[in-house]
Length: 324
Image (cartoon, rainbow, N blue to C red):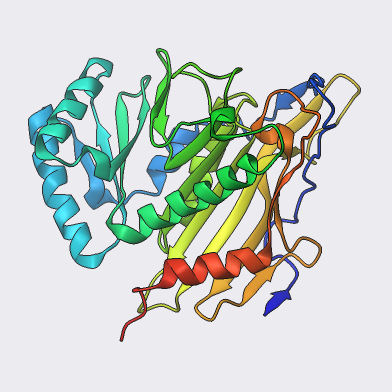
């Protein structure tokens, strides 16, 4: 059963459906990032991390040892966690990666690094549910792309959890992402679509993740889909949010100036019984063709993930999570 309800919190925005004509150029929207968007996103991310999880960097080996212990504790509670590491100079990041690989924990963490403040946020991704959520969702998106006439698995590139580096400024890993083939083949190219996953305690952190991608990519990452899993003993639930750059209502728009800021466009909640709650006018999750691709195509169609499919997907994710 699919039900709808008015959205709580931010008002939903309108998704831009671009003109899907062959090789249609993307017209410049003269986007100006508002002062809200230019705030230090890394600082806002850091503020969400508890004092106990704020560590001073000493050496790559020592950090890897402490994170190995931390990850074991997180596994006991099957909960993701965040750690802020302060004082890690730019030259240390590669050495930290090597130390983490030595301990066999590199694949269990995601890095967000800010060069100016020499600080690193480490997100621990623990357990099967996290991987099951991100992987199965991106597989659905790519399956829909493969079904468009003239498209295949060679039409896009998986960016996965690869690290995106803005030289001399910052770097970050997503949980999943894709970029169009042909126009973004370089490993350093920004993904057009990003998936970020968290547990019941990390929604605010996920919001900061979405802001990071949308703001720092300067429009090259066009959509971020956030997925938050709430596990027992709380009621089992999947919460999805679709984030895009939206009109900044606090700023005056002119013909040549269109202030925008990152924001939640739509949301979906799916409970343990598969009941889907969503904005009353938008039951489906729609990804415009030119959100993923940089140029149009004669057979271009938007990717639509129905509420009915999301119900079945959520029930699949929930398997094994309900206490017996």
